[in-house]
Length: 510
Image 1: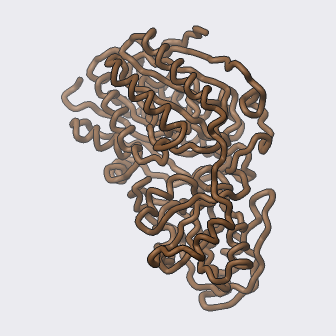
Image 2: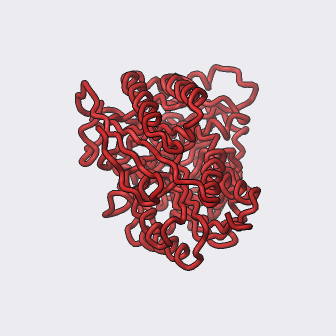
């Protein structure tokens, strides 16, 4: 290793929803570059944050390329993706670093492109001299592809959902990168894919995934050759060829050990395939609890499972809003809803005015707007810094935002689908969650991390583009897959990547 290795850092963080009728463009992306990128990451609760802190602690020189992040949503516009891809590759070509670290989600969707992250990693690989190592850490809901695993020397995932260990995953991948910069051989990664969709019960602290991860930890404890095991519960909302469940095992070169561990864990997932069925609380049951339970003045925080922006929906469902307004007038509720037209009209009407508006239900295919006389309480640009712990310290953007009131409901009406899993989305708009009986987050998992100190959290069984049921989506590329199709014996695809040659082709073994 050189006295002070130069590491280029950057990333593209976006989880794609192939069935959204929206696209992701520049307005949805938060972009940082150069020295600002490293400065923001240094204090962020993100994959890149963990990596930058680990690299800094090791004495590396951090060179910022570009980092672009957006809330999950529809496919990234092709020209936008190509501009970002080329900017990262050009930075790699121009700076000639000793190594590259990229923060990627791993399940992005790009207009007109099947494998965006694979394309990005190939472009970076091509831009550099042979042998310069590339490392990436991914969300565990990623779809790791052969192209990604071929181009990256290190490719691992976080292990927890909700993702409380993003920074840990970034730090681990960064340390593995530095070992390669120091001259250690490229590790070997064995990957096993199976055609399986998991739609519910995806928390890793309980249920079937807790059992599989306990098995993972047991294998790691008794097998010191293993450097990492990652279990990818690929999002159900990405329609991509080969997408399913994936297990990767990375070793210093022991292919037999890696293959045995990967196939054992793949079998464990398959054997539990019918345990991943929905067990969510009906909305009326949750509202009844809110009306009757003593919470010592704390709100009940509801995750709107069918309209999760953090799974890629537009965030414009009005089901909870309409139900609370119509059937539960005794409950004071704070509810976010995406509606750029309503936000624009209310802003033009002015703070303090009362305006007749239809709110929400415009962006989803089955939406129903709520028409009422709304009082305009607040108007802002929708920008805030997330308090975390998930993505702590990172900027977020709701677009032009207004706060409207009618009856017992306060609506935070945003122009962009946004990160309402963080209480700061409410507080930054003058809405104190503690003032309400019900607070709605467009999240199903991560809001529990940030709202735990605000009030008890509950996920409600609402319909929408993020409440998977067999037959909900017309998959064109992902099938055959279980449970969309009957598959009695799973065809497991096992491939090996890496070794001494940094661009070694994968080998199919079964």
